[in-house]
Length: 392
Ligand SMILES: *Cc1c(COP(=O)(O)O)cnc(C)c1O
Image (cartoon, rainbow, N blue to C red; front, side, top):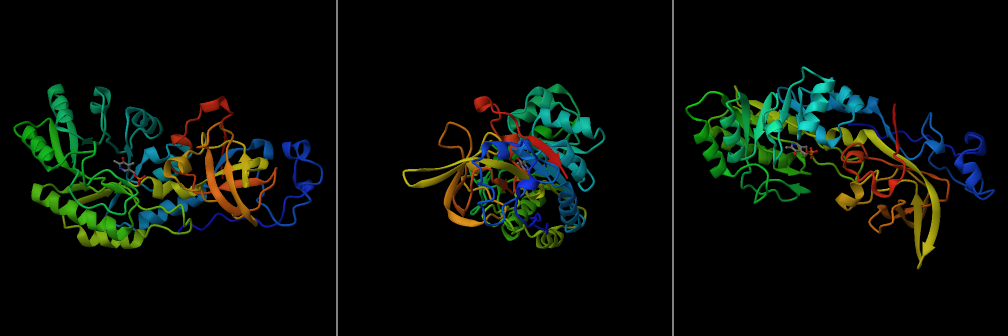
């Protein structure tokens, strides 16, 4: 759906580098012109001194979000802010989504500060009183204990009960449901909540919420949706939030979740009078961000080749948490090289044994860095400088 970020052709020449840049002064003479093939250029408007940097393509995010929106007629679309709360991204997304899903009081204040009138749903286990009693459009109740605290407060609220159904979530990259997890309630917990809600009218039961798994393709998500809808109908509610978790493949960066068949499937499942809502995070923003840095050193240790780049997993923790090699914008082929950052830990690996040729001074561009990237990283470890942020 979203085209690949275009890679300009041509090689970096001495003339393209600003005078006095790190590359000019730190490299052994001749090393730049010694490279016979094209390398990745420094992004427009930046110099090697501006790296490492996050570069966001807001136009491609706009296009992608519009296409997702168009594939889901009649379905409410919320964005899960925890995937990336960058205000520039949120401003683009706000043009396309029906609301925002937040997981904390911090995210709630952030979204309210940017879009005072936006519809917001708040979920997440372990809500403090401030979170439980916040001013939101929908509160996703995660336990009978939470509901008791809410009822005891006497406050008004519109709630969805978060259900963890015992359905198979095979193939998921993360499972929040389908077994014992701290997320939501099993049907026994839901029944307990329904009983607590009877005979009062301050807290209104609007429906159910189910975010059961992450990393599923459309057919598997539709199967889950069918099970959740069947459960909702038995319970007698008509507002159903089906969660997020649409698959994103770091191993196949050009693959895209099939929003069209998902939208068609949801349209088939939906009955008149039912409100269906989804709240994707990763699949909306992951493609619009790049983490761009430069190689400081290339070395061989016990036979293995390593390229050490400026920055590392304290800026882009995603490959460490997901256990993958972060995808790279095209580089010339070469002997497998492990790309590591500047941290003094063997876990600071951005890409493992990738067959590309790198030399000191080369620019390296990690793609698919628009979600669960900067905002999940341990920024202060080792006190290296923070990356820059650029929006195009
Ligand atoms: C994290 C989360 C999402 C978004 O998940 P993605 O995998 O990023 O789409 C949606 N809903 C809830 C409740 C979440 O915790």
